[in-house]
Image (cartoon, rainbow, N blue to C red; front, side, top):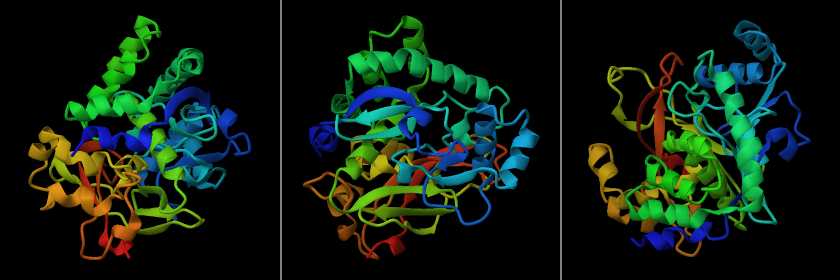
Length: 359
């Protein structure tokens, strides 16, 4: 597998800017919260509900968590799939009007993803930590006041970031440390204090890659335009279709954090599946010896042939026409969250796309 070939879908993608959602999507009501994966039908998973409460507090629309939860329960906020608005959001994080979004693409078309906090506790894990809104405001200041102006002068090319990571054995989803370092190397115009903040969070690069991947999917004339899980269902939306096709989401399987071997896990969640459907992540595990070793017990047989079975060689993207019931299905590398929202991150592993979506 040639790492350079895996960069092809990203060759024209640039990180262009950081803007608040309200500026990028001015027609979207402030009481709409954007979530990962297909639409919800009924109650929200605990992690997403908690992230929504935190977003309401962040926006200053409630004074305390109990009031925010009551407003959410009363239907004062509407949740919609983020990718239907050109936004890719990680795990359980919902995107509210004031959140700072990375803007990735070219002069003609862009996609977006929210800047994310560092290690847990964090909104993407459904944390109810009281310090999260303040941390998100600090992150917005970094993005809007320093990153955005700098990127407007010096956009960052995505393909070299991806290429450096792949060459070093990072598949750009479960492992992103090298990609984060490559991103930092391209932004040495930032103050040292800001570089240190980004360096301390190896996952900072992830939403930038997510926005780039969603942009790659959107540039096709056919095939998959959006893909991800909402914790209850996993599915995709094809080009030219308004509706998602989805199936019940089973949890990823992999390595659990200490003390969580028996913790009940939430089903696959997150829009970061766009990365894997652009040929990275689960379709690039063959380039990551450490992941192959760590996840050996849960990876399917024939891993070395998976990429050629599910990827269209012309576009470098997962091709739904190649997927058949009983045949190889794409892998998505995902964090594992707990079902009841009490623990947040409990492990990392692989979600194997359900074969019933094929055909």
